[in-house]
Image (cartoon, rainbow, N blue to C red; front, top):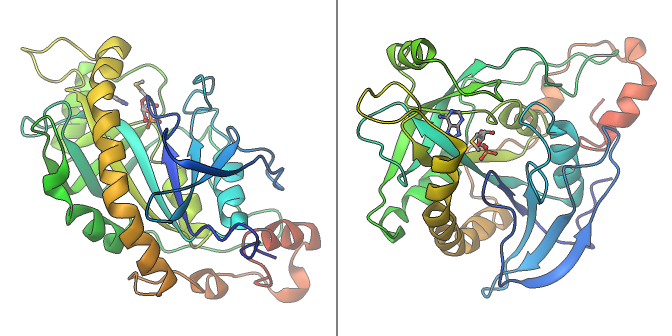
Length: 300
Ligand SMILES: CSC[C@H]1O[C@H](OP(=O)(O)O)[C@H](O)[C@@H]1O
Ligand SMILES: Nc1ncnc2[nH]cnc12
């Protein structure tokens, strides 16, 4: 069963590079559950905002940043959050900009995604005797994006919030070549990171409303007048970005929590995976059904 009574936490924040904690909040509990897909990246901190809204926070790469994008146990991360009762995720990510009009420190809400990972990541909960196909035409959640975009004027340091952009997710950990960076621009991509996949896809399979909030840290390497991206540049810009991320969160989370609790967040993904299954009942592998029960109880 999904445990909602004890924690009563409906919203999670996933922190990316440079965002490992949300200080200054009232601690409710720390949890580190073992899921059927192993342990999450780190302890999940459940805390309370001044408004009373409870949130679960999980740093994607672990506190101390010891997991590469390829190594992040994404299935365990999403499963652990779902099992806590989480219905909506705001996932932060440091990204490179592929567009002149998105300078470092601007924020971006992507609505589309191009997959350039290389098949090294566990990217689905299905297989092993239970087949299902989630709809993924719109990989991010339009309702959450709208709620966040309503706070576009709240960012400090002159940062702008851009909406409805296209992200490309590469494998890494090395950054792109200049030829690749130009190619992504020619494909229409606006920003690049290494973590939008499979996180967004697994959230969809778990019926969690998921939106990435991307924070531009560099111009990748396509721009001739700019030095190619380095970790140093990324982390320098994450100082301002981290402060803006926290400001944005404090403004958005109470409204998001209300929308989730009042069931007004659209599209509503609940129940979508019930009818995405293909496998005949008598052919389903009972062990896989049991694992899936952790995130989608009673579905298969
Ligand atoms: C430190 S630069 C590359 C690294 O930063 C981003 O991480 P995250 O998405 O977790 O903020 C990017 O995806 C890469 O993993
Ligand atoms: N240029 C870049 N490429 C991939 N991931 C990034 N994260 C931050 N900057 C990036």
